[in-house]
Amino acid sequence: MKERALIVRKGAWTKEEDDLLQKCVEQWGEGEWKRVPQRAGLNRCRKSCRLRWLNYVKPNIKRGVFQEDEVDMIVRLHKLLGNRWSMIAGRLPGRTANDVKNYCNTRLMVKKPKLASNEGEEENGEGCRGETRVKAIRPRPHNISKKLGHFWRSQPAANQAGDYPGAVDAEVAEETRVSNLFMSPARGTLRSEGDGFGNELYEAVMLWDIWMADGFEVENTFFPFPFP
DNA sequence: AATCCGTCCAACCGCTATGCC
DNA sequence: CGGCATAGCGGTTGGACGGAT
Image 1 (tube, protein in one colour):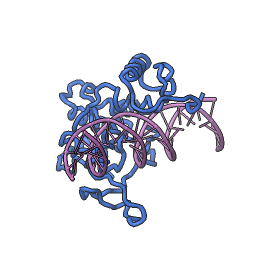
Image 2 (tube, chains in turn yellow, blue, purple; image 1 turned 90 degrees about the vertical axis):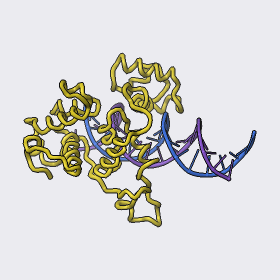
Image 3 (tube, chains in turn purple, cyan, green; image 1 turned 135 degrees about the vertical axis):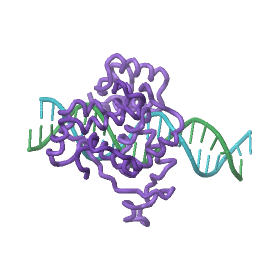
């Protein structure tokens, strides 16, 4: 049955609804959102359930003010990626795409250009803090990634130090993760597939840009081929 | 005390990508 | 290959809240 055929509840979530959602995901796992309302006994649409889980109920979500280094990261990533909130949030452990988006929309530079009078300024207009907005490349999920389990495993949820035993903190874990991307035998396959990068590889290239911009020295053994 | 106004954030909406048949 | 259902994303909105008047 289609969702619209049911009168579903809208508006703010109650504590009881959050509890039901949490228990459901704990029992059945994350995913299959179309079944979540029924499984959880919630009179909510699957989109609402998913959003609530991702932005609020999910464990380890970091709330409160953004730290200086987080803001710095957001600004730099936004310059590279544009409004790719989910990718930006993926670089900020515990932060959600919605949080990042709200933060940018309200406190940083993302301001929509005025319609008629500013026509043509959209692609290089400036934000309210003088940040130059860029037309970012918008990578899309790539079929080849599906063949590479470790690529998928390294999605945001895997950005924890625990994924790399011996890594003392998230930063080290992230460096390890990125370097592993380039050590992978699959790298050659990626390069030869031709029509683009997978998201993870794109992220790695992006981080390379950031490291270079910051004056980091990265050994060739880490990044064994010339970058675009 | 009342009201206005700006800020912030949770949640909804609409669109696109993807997977499956 | 096309159509349909679902997942996921970014844009937008509505309301709560706090400060100013």
